[in-house]
Every structure is written in structure tokens, then in C-alpha cells.
Image (cartoon, rainbow over all chains, first blue to last red):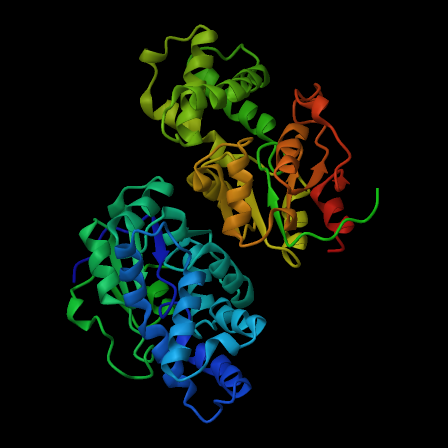
Length: 241
Length: 241
């Protein structure tokens, strides 16, 4: 691979790239499943089932003609669907408990390299989110995990969920830079492919444990990206930070 | 004054409240005025004249039916208007120099208490911008000045300039809190009055030197605000940080 021109800013996918949603959601779901009498079920499988509805929720929202709905609300609908699929009677469950369970997404743990890697990158580049998470979710997560974002951008601020091209282009526009001066950092080839189609640079960070070692659903989108690293710290090395 | 309920988040006006626009713009304008052969003119008066067009620019944009225009573009129009008023032939001026002059707003110095005060407040409350500045401007400023925002919100993200009520309400909505749980911190009674009308709490920070000691244009909007301080550090004291 040659040496591409350095970007002027870095925009990060968050779920899976910066934070380990599966371990965090499984750990919290174990407690809640026990609370509703389902303590014998596999909490990692519950996390997978909850997250598996994500793509369908994105597409369903787009097809429905609903106005933009923050991810917190979609997560809640996905949680209730998952609980029903697992045989729970959602209507009988405590409302405050369900709200707290849903807020587990605000409390996700970062991958071990994330805070140090972002801090090093931030010394040289603006680092912003380009996530489908809503602002309140990402802000809570950043405060809890110590993620040093310069700005929280992405789906809710642009009004469009990735992979809609407007989510990427609006983020570059808000940063007042050309699309090719913005680099999306993501652990997902599908996200990167959509970003590249709008003119962004792309950095792939490998997260083989995102799905607990199972293959990623978007592996067929893999391409030769401008940058590739096994952690955000290694990305900082590659970008000279 | 009694003790109001603590807010859940603090949203800051920026120009005049967090940064000293007048001293910074005067200092930079002195250099640019010299460069265009107007070195004998008063740069503080130039800063005042440039900023004085602000309210008119806001109202003009609203009345014009233009789509939302980022403040960088309005600042540039205001700069050219000011230069014409001062007798310059704008068409003959170097484009890169004008762009750099306009970007002086990205490089404003904080008031001496701002970084320490925000850092203390941030330990307890989310601290976000609720400014008419555009995202790129506020991000550059934060990186240069070390302002530790949790998120950059306000006019460009909401699509409406203050004092439009939607600028305040959308900020609370993005934080997923009720308007009365959000506190606007500002040195301007007019801004606070508009925020209070939408249900926000209000904290006034006195900045008697914002206009070089001249009276503020919106003093007639003064009310008994929930909080009042002479600096952001003093505000942190009052909020128990």
C-alpha cells in the first residue's frame, strides 16, 4: 500500500470499533435476565440477539417513513422484540428496569486500547464520532469511559443513519473540510465501503472479538483501505502520532 | 434568591461568556489592518464594528428565507461590510488574507477563568456549547484554547440561531433531558431571557469587559436568574464543584 495524504480529521464508528458492546451488554443482561427469572439463559446470546436486530431496525425505520428516531428508541424496541422472542411477557416487566437495561448501551466499556489511542490521535487530529448512536448515548458513554471526543457527530446530528451517504457527507460539511480530508475509522467493512463511496478516506481497525470470535456479517465488503491497524494505538503509530 | 434544583447539564454561550472576542479580534485585526495600509486605524473599534453587525446579520438571515447559513459565512459577509464601511476596496484584497482574517474567530482566547472553571464543572455536569458559532469554528477554538466540551451543540446542530426557541429546546432534546434540567450559562441577559422563556434554568456570568467597559446592549433584559457569578470558577463554587 502506498502512503495516502494524511486526513485533516478522524471520524470514528463507535459500537464495535471503540467500545466492546458484546461483553458489556452480556454482563449487564446477565443481571437483568436473572431479575426477570431467566437467569439460566446465555447472556452473550441475548446480547447477540439484541444487536442482530440492528440492521433490520435501520432499514425498517427508513422504509417506514418515520421521522428520524434516536437510537435509544430503536434500542428499546429491539430490546422488547428480543425479550418477546425469548418468551418474556414484556407488558408485565417493570418500566424503570427496562429503561435501565436499555441504558446499558450508554455504559459500554471501551476496548483496552481505545482511550490511549484516541488521546494520542487527538494531539494531532480532531477526533469526532460518526456513529449511529444518539448524542445523549454517546455523551454518557464518553464521560463514563473517558473517550476524549472533540465533537459528537453522526446520525442524530446529520438526521440520517449510516450507511446513508448524507451521514458521512454532513459530518465532513460540519467540520468544514472536503470529504477526502475526512477519514472514517471503523471495524466494519460495510461502513467503510459506504464512506469510501462518498469520497472519505478509510481506516480499518480489526476487532476479531466483536462477535465473540464469530465472523463479521459484512466481511464481503472488504477492500484495500488507506489505513489498517489491529488497535487504535497501532493506528496512532501509523498516522505518526 | 432561594436554592434552585441543580440542573442535569450546563450549556454555554461562548462568544463573550467563555472567550474574550474583542481583545482577540482587535489584536489580530491590528495586523491585518496594517497589511492593507490601514495601520493607523483603531483595531478595537474595528472589532466592535465587525461584531456590531451580528444582530443585524442574524435578523437579516431569518428575514431572507435563506437556508441556515453557518456563522463562518455570516462573519465573512460582516467582515467585508465592515471593510467597505471603513473605506477599503474589498475586491482588491487578497482572498487568502481575508479567509485568514475571518478565521480569527476560530482562534479567540478564553477568559482567564474559563478552562479551570469548565474543567471543574465538567467533573460533575456535562458541559456543552449552546452557541451561534458553527461546529468547525467551535471545534478549532476548543482545541486551541483547551476548552473541554463534552459536545458541541447549538445553532448549526439545531438548524436555528439563538434566540429562536428551537435552538434551546433542540439542545435539551439532544441531551435527552427536560428543558428545566438544562441550564444556559451566558454573559448576556437577552440570551438568558430567551432561554428562560423556553423553560431552561439560567446562570449569568458577568463580563464587564466584553465591550471594553462599554455597557452591554441587552442590559434591559436583566432578571433575577437562578445563578449568578463573576467568573466560571465562581460558578463552579456556587454549583458545588
